[in-house]
Image (cartoon, rainbow, N blue to C red; front, side, top):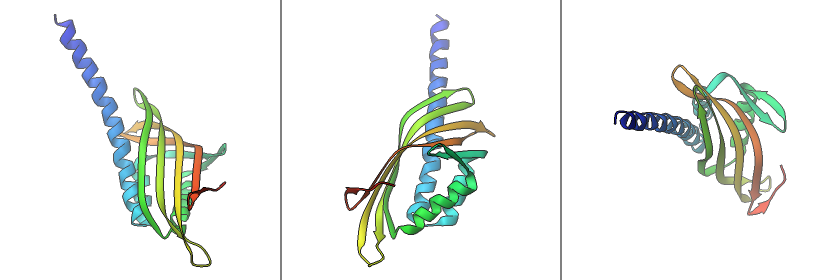
Length: 161
């Protein structure tokens, strides 16, 4: 009889732990999204700094970048947009093992961009990433983000990046 309640409590703790990871990922991304939509570059930097490990790496086309390079590229992309109308993330999969975790995350952003001739274009971007997380000081932080398939549309037409 005692084994059943113990088993239920272990399952509940495991579920809470996984929910905690999911919550922390979403909360960190919401802070980045909010700052990005406001085009608040310092806010984006602060939000990212709080959610990554000191040795964070971003891998694009097999080439690793440090945090400073990643952040510079991300904020430069934001600066090109006139307005960001939406920014969302979706956790596709998530696996946790002790103080380490990994997952597939989909990011989506829409906005507008002005051409050199002054025409406003609608931008749609969707990117899939494989991410690794570590628990640091009791908080989940991203340690590695590897770029996967990316889809970029201008006025509904695919563009190769």
